[in-house]
Image (cartoon, rainbow, N blue to C red):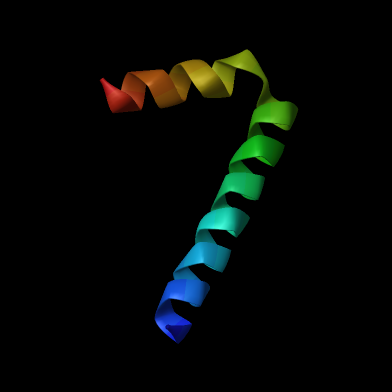
Length: 38
C-alpha cells in the first residue's frame, strides 16, 4: 500500500515537472517529446 502511494506521488511530481518544463521551453520541448515517442 505504501509503495502504491509513493508511486502515485512520484507520478504527480513527474507530471508537475513536465508541465513546468513545457511552460518554460514551449512548443520546442513538445516537439522533442513527440519525436521521442515515435
